[in-house]
Image 1 (cartoon, rainbow, N blue to C red):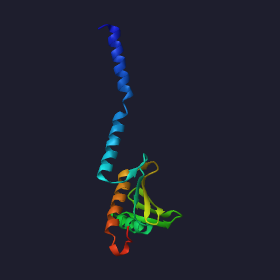
Image 2 (cartoon, rainbow, N blue to C red; image 1 turned 60 degrees about the vertical axis):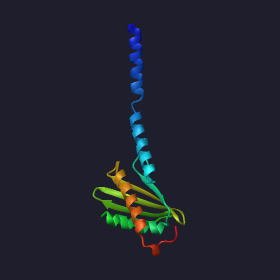
Image 3 (cartoon, rainbow, N blue to C red; image 1 turned 90 degrees about the vertical axis):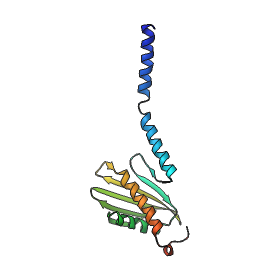
Length: 150
């Protein structure tokens, strides 16, 4: 092989390595999303750590389930307000402030949005996801007499 050919192959290899630098992160993210979908979690996350989930339950049932979940997790509720869209709750856990929005989509469907902020910049995705998971559990545990047919 000539020196020029070796240099050309090395240049192509270097460009290929530099061009695929971010692919592992994308692949791992897609693997995580696929695992969540396969497990049936149904919880979606934004890039900045906000968790979303839509439930087939009215806003008031979601409110009761959310309050029960926060109590079980020993997260203190600071406010629970009615909004034009449904409900807005604010809670505190250690150095985190948790914001829960319950948005009425229909009479029997509610979208839950959870943000767990730690300071001005950081968001705790795992805490937000766990609050949604615990709310689902609480929703399943609500007494059957208080639930309308879903």
